[in-house]
Amino acid sequence: MKTPRSSAPTVWRRLHTPIGELRLVGSGDVLHRILLPESRHEWQLPSDCREDPKAFAEAARQLGEYFAGTRRSFDLALAPVGTDFQLDVWQQLRRIPYGETISYAELAARTGNPNASRAVGAANGRNPLPIVVPCHRVIGADGSLVGFGGGLDAKRSLLRLEGAEATREAPEQRRLLAG
Image (cartoon, rainbow, N blue to C red; front, side, top):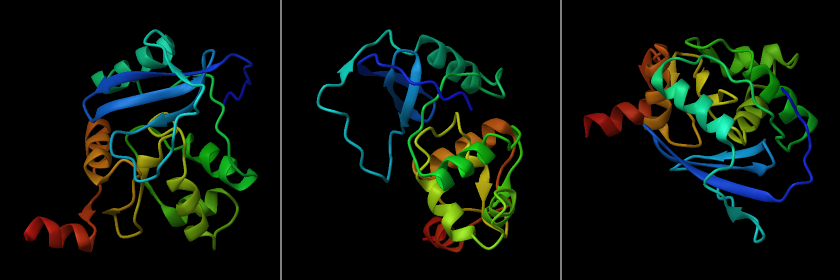
């Protein structure tokens, strides 16, 4: 993961996608955060942050290619902020190939902490750069579609785009779909 720092002011831009409007946040050409349309984590733009519709042109291009089905990985300057453990988990997420899924237990094992599935799940849920750092590729141990900061519909859409659907709906999702 490229992790350059920039002294440029923090800016954001809107990006319309098939899963809704994303907000790309960062400084210079360095992405710090991607806000999903239905994020379950509240995060406020800094008060000195301004909208710049021309910002992050390369990120917007690559995300457009991803949603068009012509891009499988990203080559962008990223600067996520997190603990050493979170940064390690997010680095491991970048190693999950396009079109593949793994369980939280497998992700924990890849970090060298095979008994840390819950901690890995929490770090996965705090990923500030969803899609680019593909936390949507992590599913339940039984193959169920669980947990995604942008909602399960968005996760399902991303996995379908990649041809990697979860094999089952989580029990609470089956109840909702049936009722």
